[in-house]
Amino acid sequence: MHLRNSLLSMGALLALIASTLSLSATAGATEMERWRLAEKTIDGDEHLVYRLSYRGIFTAFVWKELADLALIAGHRPVNFEQQPGCHLQLKLSTENYSVAEALRPTRYQRRSIVDPTLRRALLVEEIEDSTEDEQNATWINWADKRIELFRQRRQTTDDSTGFFFDDDDPYPAEPEWEEDGAKPLPAFLNTSPLLDGKYTPLVYDKSIDIPDLDTLLDPLSLIFAARRHVDNPSQDLVFPVTYEDEIRYYRTHGLGREDVEIGGVLWPAHKLQIKRTRIEGADDKELLVMWLSDDEQRIPLRFEIQTKIGKIKIHIRPESLRNNHGAKSCIAASSRQMASKDLLPAMQQAVQ
Image 1 (cartoon, rainbow, N blue to C red):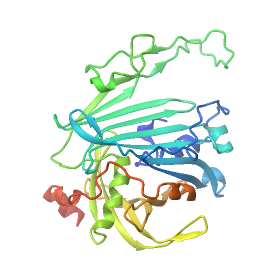
Image 2 (cartoon, helix red, strand yellow; image 1 turned 60 degrees about the horizontal axis):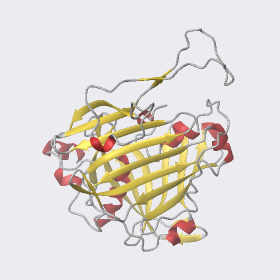
Image 3 (tube, one colour; image 1 turned 135 degrees about the vertical axis):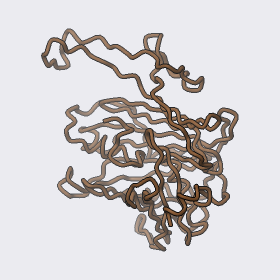
């Protein structure tokens, strides 16, 4: 299952269904790097840690805790291709959950560089370490108005004998790797460790044009941008989002206020819905619901995602909420009017 084809279009919160709930996975528990998301903090960064639970077909409709998830916003600005940017990151690990770790041990991360005003994504990377590793990158090349997609080279094996071999097969197939595509990798992607001293893990895949838009985010930066909705809760905001080799449009919609229980304490919160819009022909389909703390930080306290195969709940850990009181990121504290007024006139009419 490739990350770009995960069951949920938000990819990020997201790889979970494809990665940890795939009961068809046959690999046993594997010794993997322990990230200790629930224990680590990063000095100065906003580092929010959550517990992810699922109820549905794969758990006989019983709630099961399956993974830890961290949302991280760096406090130090970066310079990317002569553009100011901020680091955002999502990390997901099954290391503390024996069922998920035995079925599909997963260390998934999605990293984005986005401009400080949360209007433009610049670079997006997806990396999964599990029974099958995966790596992808998307460069939003604003100078040339192109979205450049890069993928990991595919390893091929020789099964010409027609037999199935186990791990003790004394004659494993020799790995072969694709050669570079028609375009060379940009310098900032050509720094990964070489394979066999010759190839880097990524190769050019394809590219698409950026339409006449001033704003374009990725699924991870959309989560951070949606926190701005409470600047003007009466107005829905529409965000173009790059997803695989297409551009989709998502809308935030306020659902009022609702208390959220965290560690036995009720926290006042803004309830917010993110939906895919009808702009490009898709139905107004709910993607997720999130609850934001009723303070200046607007920390996501809880997420809920309804899928065809069950429901996902993501709750912030009480200690993480305490540890991040007053944490900063390089994302601007407030921004100009976002997305809605920047869309093409035809798109504005479709949203209304």
